[in-house]
Image (tube, rainbow, N blue to C red; front, side):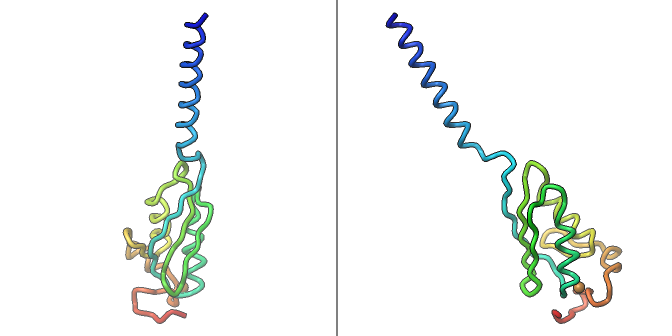
Length: 121
Ligand SMILES: [Cu+2]
């Protein structure tokens, strides 16, 4: 009978410790924060950049016109940094790691041509 008690104690301890280590893992479906630079000049740019950042799995996207700072909350199990940057570059905007192609940049309206040294407006 004593042996059985010890066995149950061991079993219980193992069960408890496995539950504890499980709860330490990152919560599934939790969004993480990502910050990077995107070039742009005006409020129209802001709308386009933020819309482009909203790929599947992105919970929040906000771009600051004056600083060029992009803040994104996304779910790592649904998307990744590259996918977000790629979509912004595809919309015609340069990011810190990925630049827009000349072709995509050319599609921007004249007021948004940030590479031509336009003033922020
Ligand atoms: Cu613009």
